[in-house]
Length: 350
Image (cartoon, rainbow, N blue to C red; front, top):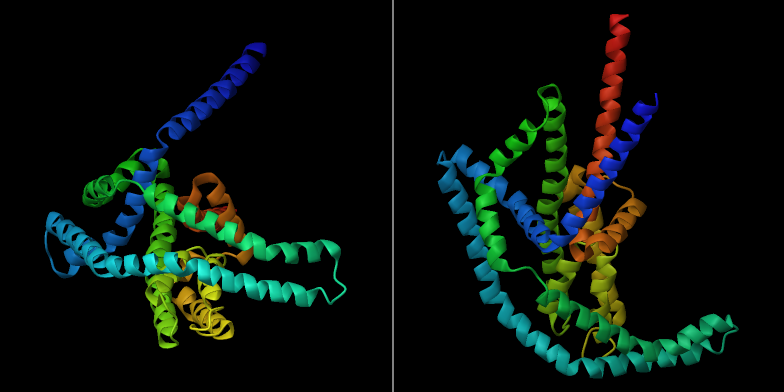
């Protein structure tokens, strides 16, 4: 009996050591893991293209992969060559003029704070409101420095493209190899789990690319129509940050609202209406249509997933947090369905 207890303790200790070792190993290769994850997300976008080319154009696997990868490269080159110069020019202009817009925003916030002092508000709240104009510029400077450091800390594009091509070529084989690692009796479950992962991650990433692109286009066009400067840059910011569900749109609207305090721009009310209108279309039409079953989570679950993902893996964690939560939800539903089928089967036997 004592020997059995010692064996169980030894097994538990061994599993703990292996788990700690795995965590340590993954932390040491975190840069490589980021490369693989980003590449895998791109592969999930391109894989349906290769399958469509093979099925409807009846071409070989290698040619389908090469064509899909070439389309991806040409799209990136086109975006970089057309949009980047304009964004660069607008970014330089907005950096040059931003102190003026900050002073305008601080002036209006000071006026608002002075107006609120006439009301009998809580002293702590009044203190926060009075300090708000002084704190807005350091907060925006910190946000700008964080964005710049984030841009320059992106993984090497060459390695990503290299991994994407070979991973796209062997994607089916890799998935089959993973399934074959599972004992034969459990292969059906492994295939179902792989399908759940594909539906959540693939559907979420592909749907979000289309959805965020449309949000960016709508925002940029509407801002341009109403005479907002830097409309292209603001549209791109809105599209990129919109991938962060519920939180991103508010962050994206902040630069436009600050610019709206100037006399040469649309009013703050018009600017706010534009962002609210685009987000309403996104919430009512785009998200249900493009994300579909990929995200069937409650808003609080999405927000918690975003926060947990950010703490664990930064921006990449925020992108992956929602589909991972969707996978967990789908797996729980799958387990319940299996239990129901098993229960109904046993009742039939009886």
